[in-house]
Amino acid sequence: MKQVTSVFWITLAITLGMSFLGVLAPEGFENFSKTIMNYISVNFGWYYLLIVTLFVLFCLYLIFSPFGKIRLGKPGEKPEFSYPTWLAMLFSAGMGIGLVFYGVASPVSHYINTPPTAEPGTREALEDSLRVTFFHYGIHAWAIYAVIALVLAYFTFRHGKPGLISATLEPIFGDEMNGGWGRLIDVIAVFATIVGVATTLGFGATQINGGLTYLLDIESSFWVQLVIILIVTVLFMLSTYTGLSKGIKYLSNTNMILAGILLVGTLILGPTLYIFNSFTDTIGAYLQQLPTESFRIAPHDDEERQWVLDWTVFFWAWWIAWAPFVGIFIARVSKGRSIREFLAGVLLVPSVVSFLWFSTFGITGIDEQNKGADIAGLPDEQALFGMFGEIPLGVVLSIIALMLIGTFFITSADSATFVLGMQTTNGSLSPPTTVKFVWGFAQSTIATVLLYTGGLQALQNALISAAFPFSVIMLLMVFSFYKALQKDKKSGPDKIK
Image 1 (spheres, helix red, strand yellow):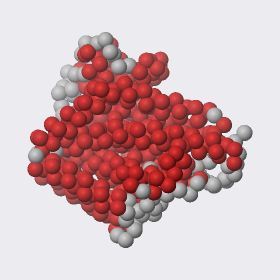
Image 2 (tube, helix red, strand yellow; image 1 turned 180 degrees about the vertical axis):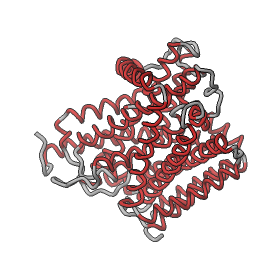
Image 3 (spheres, one colour; image 1 turned 90 degrees about the vertical axis):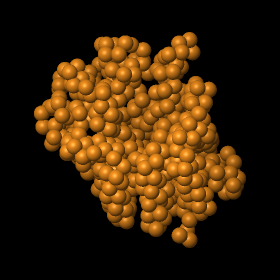
């Protein structure tokens, strides 16, 4: 533990302190954190819409500009991982468990319970349900991750800076980033990471429990979820011990194989033609309405504006809060790729896979809902299994889904311990196993305590609130990166023409 920095101790103390608040006064803490979150959402919803769209435009500019050929590493350096492994790793860390959790629940909910503007259950609500799901999980979400990952990979692998968020701001603030301000920025990043993963562990445990409840009638309770977390903790600790090139690499590839089997199986056994038609139609609607949707805040319609705040603004804040974890991990596995290659891969491939995933599971769920099954009435963690219960070979698909949730679960926790280790050992690209074990144990403990007290929602609110200051850091990172690119253009080892 000699290699850890003060960021380790400060963040650990803050996170444990907030967890104790969740234990001692769960209702008070939840109300307080919700008040802060709602205040930011209502008063700064416009700000979130503008900055996330700015990130998308900035990424597109870099893809088509001469800067796109700059390599994230030394000139001539080759990528560390193959394309399939690289895509599997970034996808597993960035969106994996969320797709399984909300693949059915989100489109069905927007169709029956929470349509943006149309009447629930109508054809317009059905069309909107898939389109807004595409919007919330598509290019905008991945642009948030891409900005963090790109800037960090550029400074780390091309300029030899420590793998820290604070190090990317040196072109603006200079040596200030080696002092208290730099530590503050890194503390915010580490806090967002550990809380984000702790909430994911909690949600993952509840979904595995939900699947077991639906399949085997095992009660949904804290004690069952505790056993699930303990098993997963042992497994991801073993994966952590084997390192990045073995544990996470093999798990990520396993994730993609299981996800592929589940996707193809549901595509074949579900309403196949309906799925492909809906996928194609929604892609068109998504692209057509993308500019309008990107800036929609509905100032003249209170009901519509509230929907935007509850969904779009919430998602943008959620992705920003997750950006330190996912972005740092993607940066770590992207060494040697060009900026153009990196952004095309990060923005487009996971988005298209997500669109196909939501079309397959969402349309199958909606189709069964229209046939009489009450998918919309199930808890989110049971919606997937409820849908499987209505189609052929549903039990087999449910078992595969449970395995996939488990492997995504382990990969997310494993990736997070690696990122936390990096951020609390001065950006080490190979953090000590001891430090990773401490963070792994801390994540599981916090998730367990908050599940027991019902404080998971409060910690999620705190995470969304932490996204606001981190969004300002992201804007500074973009400016710092562009400033460094201009310098690289004039004097870099492979000058841009």
